[in-house]
Amino acid sequence: MKNVLSFAIAALFATTLAAQEPAIADDPTLFIPADSADLNEFAWKYRPLVVFADTPNDPRFVTQMQLLRALPQELITRDVVILTDTDPAAKSPLREKLRPRGFMLVLIAKDGTVYLRKPFPWDVRELSRSIDKLPLRQQEIRERRTTE
Image (cartoon, rainbow, N blue to C red; front, side, top):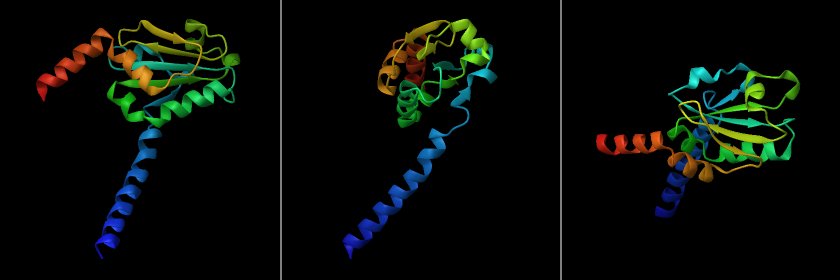
């Protein structure tokens, strides 16, 4: 009887977690099309992570999006918003400003400076480490520790 009850509780817990995960991964505030975004609206609030590709079918773009969707909570904790641009013909303001060639990943700090450019996919763990080295992020971590 204990085994059946344990199994039922574990199944209920797993189902609850599975139901919550897509809500975070598909959070509309986390993934934003670049053509509708203005970097000035993110200043001092969010760290934009811009993912460029020449087509949404680019294997590097597909891989990058899978990596980002794998651990969205890590990005949310670090105030990251993801902007995607897969249409070079549209000539979005971000594409004009950052001038990508094919696939490119760009991390922009809260102050608006370009912090990181990568021509290949990066996983959330590497991005998190890089973000955690930023002076403003270090300050956020210290402030969070003092309030806890």
